[in-house]
Image (cartoon, rainbow over all chains, first blue to last red; front, side, top):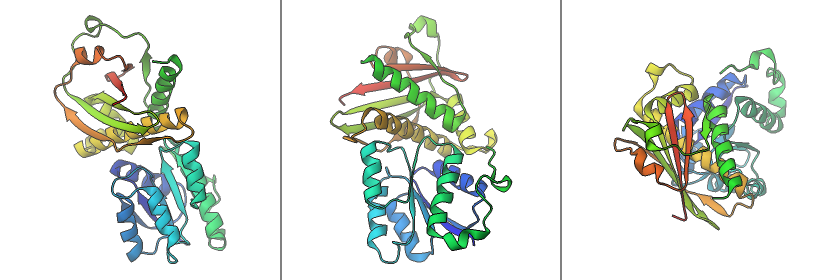
Length: 146
Length: 155
């Protein structure tokens, strides 16, 4: 199974870095979609099947917390795990995200290994039966080198 | 400014540059004089980001062109010739976002302060003399020249 991934971040370079990190993680990627804010992310969700969302919190127009609320409020999107990749690292913000049902939380600055580890954990939990054929996390196939 | 806060700012910035850009910053704990610094290039990249809440303030970042391009190349993992101006400005902006966001996470675990949206621009009127007079100045030595950070308290 290949996963369709949506990355929401107002930084184009950050989206490129996340994309590269995910590609090198060993997770089989189908389609890769990019959004510059929560509104754009919701528009992409309307027209595409997405398996996991990686989102920043601090974005213009519509931030990550509001995106998470919208995803969880929708019967169609509630199944999609959302992982925050964000500079917002206060304990209060992390707790708020957990209350809203975030699947994972990655603090910037991050090392690629962190994205890889949390992405695997989240995908394994959400798509347990489809994950059986994936290369094991940390295996030779999934080593990253940048 | 509180010594612990100064130290936390130095550590946070160094961590961001090392983790995301593989670039080492050497903090200058004593502010040099204009004579010691000598002539500086007037072309810098500037990023600003504010925060508001229990305490408010603004950070300004001034990166020499070589440093801004260098961290963009390292961040994206591409050749120097493949980096464009838009990517440099975006990386400079994201640097401010990561540095101050990470700093607030350390000094404000209760999350009482809210981070604003960062901005960046290329500036041709950089003045070392103006910045040396700022009380909230932080200086770092890099292989591309001095990296300047100014904390404006309560703006």
